[in-house]
Image (cartoon, rainbow, N blue to C red):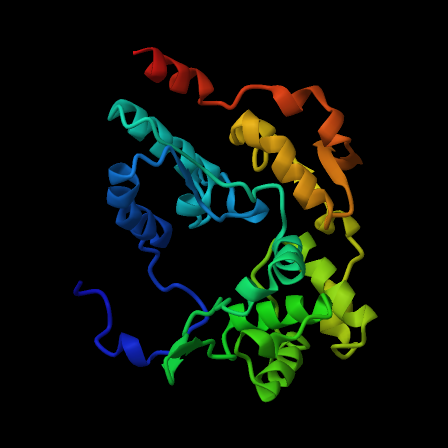
Length: 279
C-alpha cells in the first residue's frame, strides 16, 4: 500500500498503526476446522471494555474495536445463520475486566498462564516466545500480575523487565477504560509497587467494582451467551470475583445474578437455532 512508509518495520510504536481486524484473521483461519468438525459454538476471548459504540460528528464508530465487540460477534452469527451453518459466535468474558480475567488465569490455571504472551513485539528465543518487556501491553500485564501478587517471570519476563515496567507505569498510562486503569493504579500504590507522584495519584481510584462481574445492556448482557452455560460459568467466576453488579441509571448496584430472572432468559439467537433444528 503506497501510503505505508517503507521503513515501517523499524518504527517503534505502542499501537496498532493500521487496524486490520486481527480477530477476524484468527476467526476465519479457524472456521474451516470448525465447519469440518461441526463445531456449533465459536468463543472469542473479549472482555468488558471491548464493546463501544461512539459518535463523532454524526458518524457512528466502534473506537477501532469492532472486531472485538459483541456487535461483530452478532454480525458473524447472523452471517452463519444465512449460510445455514448452525454456528454461534460469542464471548464468555464480557462481564469480566482484564484484572479479573488475569486473577482467574493466575489462580485457577497457572500452568496455562505460564504460556501467556500479551505483547506487541514478542520474539522467539531458544524455541520459546518471549514478550519484549517494553511496550504498553507488557507494562500493563506486568502491573496487573504484580497487583495480584503473581510473579511475571513465570510467563517469560526477566526481573529487569519487571522493574522497568513498574517504573514506566509511574510515568505513563495504560490503555484500559479509565476506571479499570484507576483501580490498577490504586492496587499498585496500596502495595507500594510504584512510587507516589502526581501522575500515579491522579490516576488511582478505589473502584472496587472492577473486580466484580459487571452487567449492562450495551457491553455485557446475560442474553449475549447461551442460557445453558450461564450458571456454570458465572458460578466459576464468582469464586474469584467480589460479587456481581448491574448498571442502573449510570450507577453500579449490587445484583444477585445467580438468583435473577435474567439468568434463564433465552440467548438472543436461540430462536434462530431452534428454527435451524426444526428445518
